Amino acid sequence: KAGVTQTPRYLIKTRGQQVTLSCSPISGHRSVSWYQQTPGQGLQFLFEYFSETQRNKGNFPGRFSGRQFSNSRSEMNVSTLELGDSALYLCASSTLAGGPRNEQFFGPGTRLTVL
Amino acid sequence: QKEVEQNSGPLSVPEGAIASLNCTYSDRGSQSFFWYRQYSGKSPELIMSIYSNGDQEDGRFTAQLNKASQYVSLLIRDSQPSDSATYLCAVFTGGFKTIFGAGTRLFVKA
Image (cartoon, rainbow over all chains, first blue to last red; front, side, top):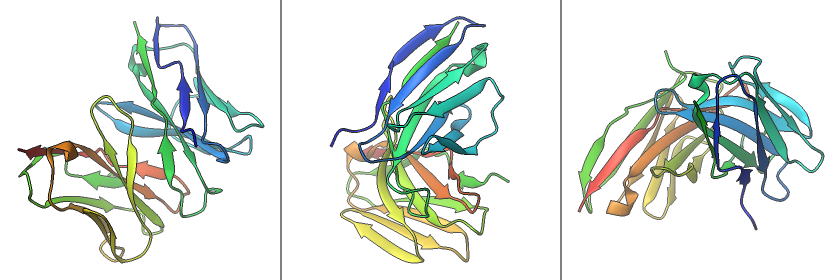
């Protein structure tokens, strides 16, 4: 079974631009979560989607948004990029519908650099 | 108080020793607990899951959970240099979010 895929793997943008990242979950997984990882803050939860609905959201500004399509693929968008948005963005898919046994499997991540 | 706390380390152990990694969490409604391993430049990889009090063993790895003390640990027996990585504790909370600790860096010396 193929794992979680993320595109692109690397991205360089300048301040003020916007960016869209894509994630394809493991086949059969309907829940997709997004995380931001930085050396200073660790892994921070952005949001989670299940069946095209955002079920949960972390403490990030409205510049960060996402969506999920009917095939469970997900995108996240960051508008008006700031230097502090430079990070590794990780997508994780999970087997179950958000129940307690919520094992998540991560993709390779997208490394975003904002200049 | 952080929701999930880990000692950042680094924790250094000799090859063949037992490495003990600890994690505490604040939400008493937390239901599931996970350990991930992350090598430098790579994404986290799930290595252990535990859902009830006690021990859960998988090969050289043992996860231990004590809900009364809000404490989770990971033991790595017969540590190998290839175990050198950052270990992330993750907790599925009563708020239906998975919260990650900052991670503990482990070095296994050959």
